[in-house]
Length: 410
Image (cartoon, rainbow, N blue to C red; front, side):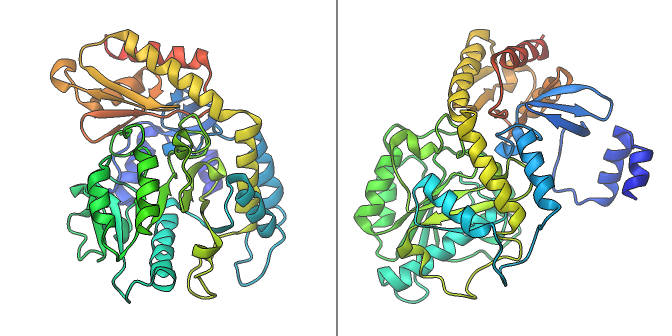
């Protein structure tokens, strides 16, 4: 079948029609069918080139098909891809040592997807609460922030405040509390309950619309979690790995969470790879058979993750994200277009709010216009467009994106 498709490639309309007929309707993609990527560029099946301003939700921070990652994947895939954790493999230990030293943690639990990392963190926090903090059995609680998004498993939607995520998926996982984001007073009230195991939070809320908390919020979270003996879980799956102009978004305030969640760009978009990093005290509560994954820690993932992390440092992608993000937002501000407001961001994680009354179209419609001008962006909700290109973006490409934005509004 694959060889047949390659000899007789489908048109864009044929591809979209097959998805519509045979796939679940759980996404509403823009009407573009992509076939190739390189760096910050993507090409559709008709040969049209686009600047990618989504980067697969920050999974391809290193750029599409980075040659170093392609080489590692080819070499390792030809040698060994999967053994399962029933046996040791020759890369897992070296990878675990590398990533722990890279981020300054004692231990790591390798998983696959970002949502698995979140589920793992909640299990760890509960286990720690019972065995270290001394919470009574089945009483542990985990606190989340309003507007959070960390996936669509039952636990994730149980913590969500977005009706699209949770409606008609109940009953929900118990033991979850929600407090307003960027509100230390309400967080302290929640943490004062001695049964709270942890507070899990995104340093910048991505799906909510690139919501950046007040300066000092993360430092306040760190202080309150320490004061009340609760674990600080930082969901850096979107915000980490150079995206916001520093290696981690928490680095902007110099705070270290008790549990760090990483994913997406941890493999440079080559395959699902995630990681949960923490201390001996937290991680050693897990015993054999209590948590795991068939693919977690597989040799191919280990090889790719080491290379992906090394590329971020070698190519100074955090620094480039900071400089290009400032250039992009400065350019957006200088356009001075009625209907575009609330331009905000950090590094190459930016958002623009759309006033449909002034602009004459909502966020989705604007994304469709941007697509026609060769710029691929993604709306979040009805009124915000996210712009999060690969971190290899250069100034010339930023200027091309700004020209596409102006053309889309003519």
